[in-house]
Image (tube, rainbow, N blue to C red; front, side, top):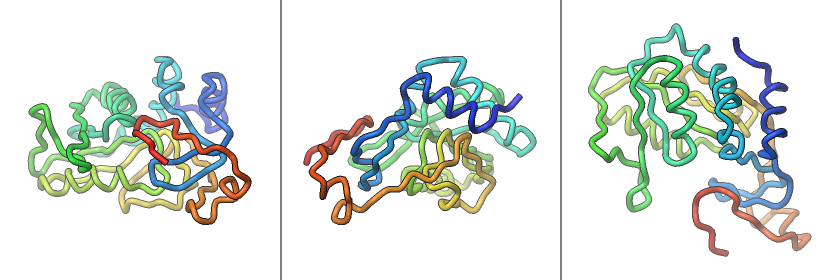
Length: 194
């Protein structure tokens, strides 16, 4: 049975995965809040329960496979694929661009669900959607753990975020945290140089 947003947020709190400070997001924007999904995903039961919201949502939509961007979406995508009993693949960055590697392929006409951990602007998800479309496959939908846009980012297909919350993000040149001189932290997996 799917869990409520408050139950999902409680898992983030218990895992110390909802952080406060001054953070550089993958999108390049700055924020006072950060969802460190890797910390909640280290607990298989939390992962199973949160991902059940995604798999239940797509259970009656044709899905042949699940694809996720590496690194953040891998555990989410795998768990959703496991719950739906579908194939799982992931895209990796090569020379700054997401590509299929490791012999993964998508066949024309297949229905693919894209899964991600956090969506702020939707950039990584859009890159993976383009991989699906360029292969001649169909986009079944998009599922993610956290929608930081609170529903503002739309992909034009069925989509669900287990947690939908508006976390304000700032362009660096207007960031009030920068103006206060608060140290900027990049807690995600990508390298950060200031």
